[in-house]
Image 1: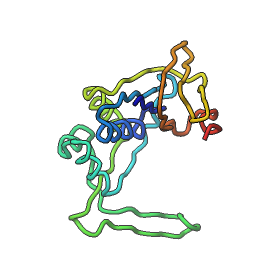
Image 2: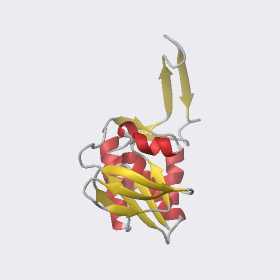
Image 3: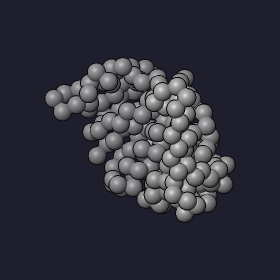
Image 4: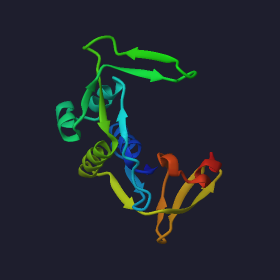
Length: 168
């Protein structure tokens, strides 16, 4: 099976590593734009990220050290439902924790790991999608490459390709 992830960054590389853990015999390709880049803001996670790391055979200590992550015990939502409103969500004590991290460092960490594990990277920009009754079967890049695919994941974020949204 040929699986293509449109967009790199944290979302694209997390998706590719998860899919690799589930579909070991698949060809997984990430199409990452060298023009668009990564937002690179500080991001937080929930305790579920620890399950993801374990599922994908990623050492938690290695992840923490290489991404300079800090521990996080909860989330404060300010002005979430109305001005001056506040909601606090704690992860039920020290046993339950998560991480706060720089999205660019985490994306690079997952990207390097994915490439070492055989995920293919294509740097380029999408021109259009070719479809049939079953959905997208290939992707044309601006440089003339055509990428065949059986399934596409859209992890393109804020710079998403509007033509992909129309397909679904």
